[in-house]
Amino acid sequence: MKPKPNAIVAQSGGPTAVINSSACGVIQEAKKSGKIGRVIGAVNGILGVLKEELFNLSAERPETVEQLKQTPAAAFGSCRYKLKSLQDSKADFDRVLDVFKAHDIRYFFYAGGNDSMDTADKVNKLAADASYELTCIGIPKTVDNDLAFTDHCPGYPSVAKYVATCAMEAGRDTEALYTTDTCTILEVMGRDSGWIAAATGLAHRSDEDAPHLVYMPEAAFSFEKLVNDVQEVLKEFGRVFIVAGEGLKDDKGQYITADSGAFAKDSFGHVQLGGVAEMLKAVIEKEVKIKARWNKLGTNQRSAMHFASLTDVKEAYMCGKMAVKYALQGVNGKMVTLVREKGRKYKCTTGLAELRDVANGEKKVPREFINEKGNHITKAMRDYLKPLVQGEAPVKIGEDGLPVFMRFKRKLLEKKLPKYM
Image 1 (tube, rainbow, N blue to C red):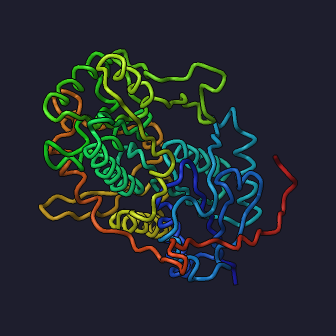
Image 2 (cartoon, rainbow, N blue to C red; image 1 turned 45 degrees about the vertical axis):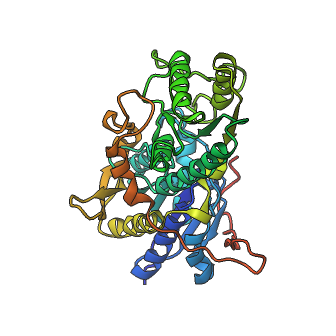
Image 3 (spheres, helix red, strand yellow; image 1 turned 180 degrees about the horizontal axis):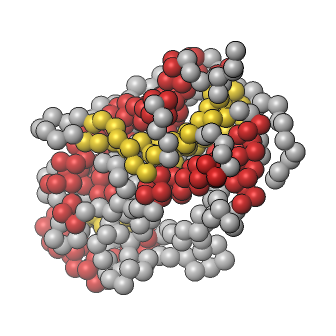
């Protein structure tokens, strides 16, 4: 009897609160199908494939796999290793295929963003050229919510719920002490898109509520505008709470905080950003003559499982589950998408997009989601966000009162190829 083909799952890029939920969907659906042999995990994304550092997910306890839904970050390990063109990275791509052949891997499920979809697309093309039967399916993942062809990305609803709550809580702190700490600036992630910054606007239920000002990369920013906006809010409330995306740009499209030094770009070739809140604080204190302080949530915002959106967890799982279903139906070279159905009641199903189209696309915050002044969100953005942040994901709490997160045993498979890197 011919053995069943194996599948591999890998995670790439910045972790999220729900990328493990997608992995859980893949593992459980693959096992349920009865058509896939072993489900293999790659340690640290595509790097684990290149190094042949693989472990048998099928050997993990079912309870451990189920707990993926309640565990943040990337349980397999992630990476920011970018495979370039097939010509420039041919040795890497050939190695990926060699590893797949050595372990009879016929299904490749890759969870990540644009760069990850590009990698999956190129692996798929190489396999086709080599007449190696391989099915490649992408699973959307990014807190930035900037993947094209999908209504939203798994990971975004949870970060949206978290940052909006942080703005509410820190806003009340500012309100209590505005006589001394008059201004607070909250810096959030968002290199080229303002989806995360925009999400904090949900907290602004009344004119008094924080945030009073929300700045996104999609709306041209200037310090003169900042000073005028701050002064207007101060006249009305005597205090001001500001949210700023890390990727704010001026009217020429240049980052206002781009690093031009030795570490100006990350491993994906993206400009390194940071310090926008500090810069805004300095300008406000100098020009407006009030005391300002800043908060930076950092990686907390993308791994906040303790207040993750239940909608997000369910949809992330659905993406993983449907990736397997589509693959077994013969779909190849596609990424699973989330489709918001029309109607008054929110309902989300899945669709498909070409890997190459996702890799080359980008979704910005639409102009109709940003107010006319470019310093807050509109009702359309609120309507888009509200269904996504509904429900609180269940989290197991230990005897010490803290969340309990799973860990794989990671029993590594025996290597069959020479060392590569």
